[in-house]
Image 1 (cartoon, helix red, strand yellow):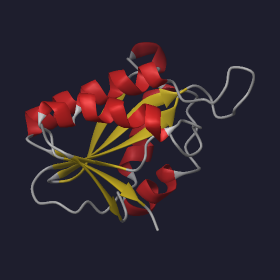
Image 2: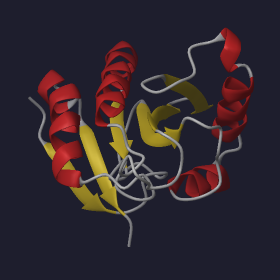
Image 3: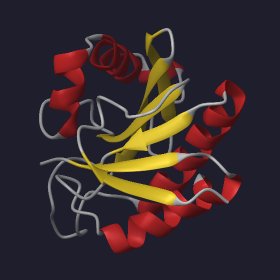
Image 4: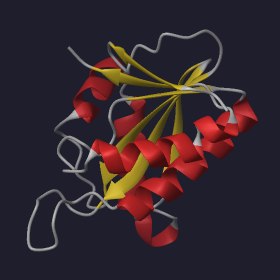
Length: 158
């Protein structure tokens, strides 16, 4: 089992050698424009472009809650667009985060990380605009990644 590391820093600038996956939560309505995705887009245009195309062509692909799209942004770096947020607003159904979708997405990220021999880097996924609680997300991260011996770092941005 690999311990979960939590450090201060920018998840779009992973502090590791070798292959890396940067994982983050997206919504299921094709919206990309607030939160961590802005930091991703400032660094690389490919994840947003791929996500928007994935959403546009959703009638013929797997886009939806629980789906994960892996986008290569450098020879040794990928961004995992994880669809784990229903819509964008907190309403009568509670916050938009869907914990079961987070779990399915993290399982997919773990499979990619194993195949690529990659470490995984992420902000406190689902805890910003998605309204999730870290005490519910952290055990999912540990079970999907750390328990499978995948080096995993969570970044708290200053």
